[in-house]
Image (cartoon, rainbow, N blue to C red; front, side, top):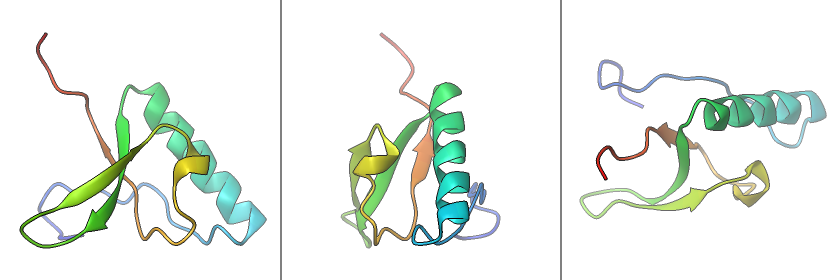
Length: 75
């Protein structure tokens, strides 16, 4: 994350700890309920790629972050 570049930390924790995982799942669901979409970055650099996820169970256990973004506008 780069401060000042639009990134906001919503929640962080260790999925191996039950209390942390509950917090992460709750925030994940909250963001989806707000209409956001979720993706897990799979590569860095000029050719960035990400895996779209619709459920917390689809997030790889070793993922460093999940990025939430609004759906594309238009029709």
